[in-house]
Amino acid sequence: EVGGISFHVTPDTFFQTNAFAAEKLLETVTGHIGSKPGSEILDLYSGVGLFSLPIAKAGHKVTAVEENPQAIEDGKLTAKINRIGGCRFLAMRTQDYLKKRARERRFDTVILDPPRDGCPEWAIRLIGRGVRPRRIVNVSCNPQALANDLAVLTQSGYRIREILPLDMFPHTAHLESVTLLERV
Image (cartoon, rainbow, N blue to C red; front, side, top):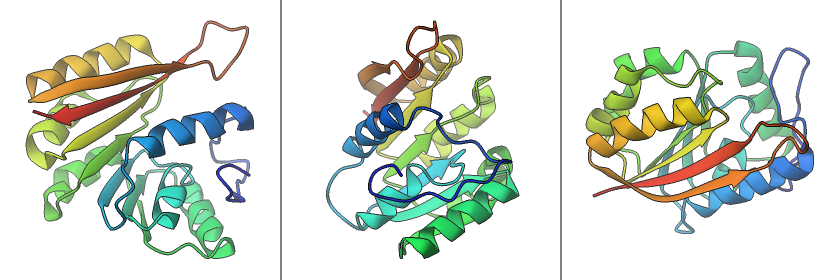
């Protein structure tokens, strides 16, 4: 349970192993979304909906994109169990979504929580110059991938407002960072 939501997570899907730290991560990300309900949110690399479902529960319209079909099914089941509407789950690669459908809708905020390798540079460029949300919340567990993403996004007209490191794995060298960027 994280953020007052009981998540259904099967063995073939990813979920943060430290539930206490996942709560802090969720609080940080949702704090950057804004409290005005009805905002359009795009959650890329959404997994089972750790961010998507609490944000939808708060009254926002969320599109969650994840390539693992089992994670999508877990997210849909979690939404049903917790009676959460307003979240549309799409089982597809983030890169495919960006190529084919990203410009179909306007998004107030894009949440990026990519795997350790980060996003391809062209995908970050498309988010910054094509999708053009007002706000981007980048969750990263790899400082080098984050630096690469931030270089592209700042060149695409975004300003870094905050970078918050979170120690998700105490007594290790691993660190999660949440970065808030806003379009200038």
